[in-house]
Image (cartoon, rainbow over all chains, first blue to last red):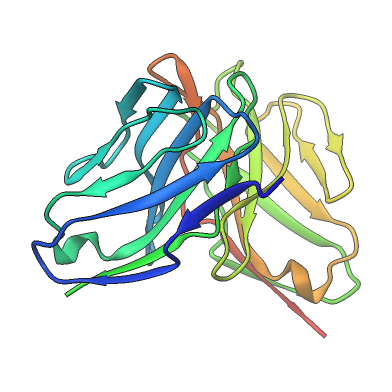
Length: 112
Length: 112
């Protein structure tokens, strides 16, 4: 299994641009989530999904959209990037009912 | 949601045991204690979790006090590759599904 994969690894955007961070897992996990990590802030939950077609907001959802059309994929969309969205983004997945989350390698995003 | 308190940083000599403390004095009876770690530039990695009893796996041991207000993660023979930020997390329930709230963690530096 590849586990949780994320693309791209690095991205630079200009303010106002849009982009999609990709996340995929091949472990047939129902639960997937997106976190952002900022210096001195730990990880903060952005959005999560408990299965295909079901998403919900986390702690810091503003400025981000998600969808879950398949079990494997959980993309995170930035519609109009802002400098405040400069961060490292981690995708994670787990089986529903399990509390062991598997994290991807992260995407480092810079918004100028 | 129960909060956790961890030291900001700790040092450990290679080959010695690393004992990482965590206070969670407001933990409720059905909340678990989880430990994750994050090696630099990588996604977080699950280590161990427990409810009341002490737990051990191939990576570490978890000692939870009888009143459950604190716990200690023990890496019995620390190596340089154990240098990482260690997060103590108390499981919360979010909209009926579990999620994890990451704090700032403890930066463990293992030295030769």
